[in-house]
Image (cartoon, rainbow, N blue to C red):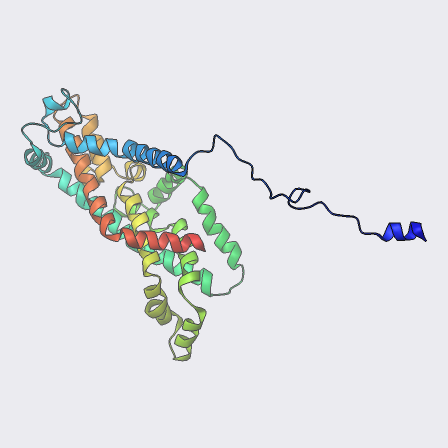
Length: 311
């Protein structure tokens, strides 16, 4: 009996306080880094990264104020004493009978036209993949998203062969058609549609007699406006800075994009050294539309990326 009672006696558990009733001790480290020092380190690293990114732009802004001899002498991060910005810009647009202005117009057509069509197609496709059920939907969606993994440079030559067979090379269509498709835009549009458009709202529109097309344009597209603007900005910047595709597709000087035209001038600096100054000024002018477009629309950019990233 005594043995039985001994086996049923509860085994005492070790005290959570350390076994002797004393309060638990926290591990302390004499080398702990203060929070303000950690924050200062992160801020300093971020500032260094931002400065490294902005240094080329800062140099470019100073270079715009200089003459050709001043570009090769003196401090690159100091403005010219004469401040020749207006003279440089005037010479830029007057060179070769105003060819730079033509290149800027071509680039605007490529970027605005391609970005608008790509945005509409991406939003419509993302909306359809999110709100409609059809056979093989996820397989088709996976096929579209697989396009994100393919580098653009890998498909430029096949695109050139296709455009050549269609006799579209050396036309604006050879640049516009390839940039009308944006797989990442489809992904972002589907993610944004999932969080921004309640299914009940679409059902209410259908009950009121609206067709699918009218429901998309009247309800879906309006509610996806921040996401659509984000897709437009991404595509616009990509097309504006596109260099390789126009270089392969276009040989007519009057259809050059800005990057292609500046590259041509830069290749001719051995014959005309003044092209160096014009290329520098042209590079600065090329960045202005992107800055002017991005600054007022940046809050839509952040909202669209945040909504798409959450989903």
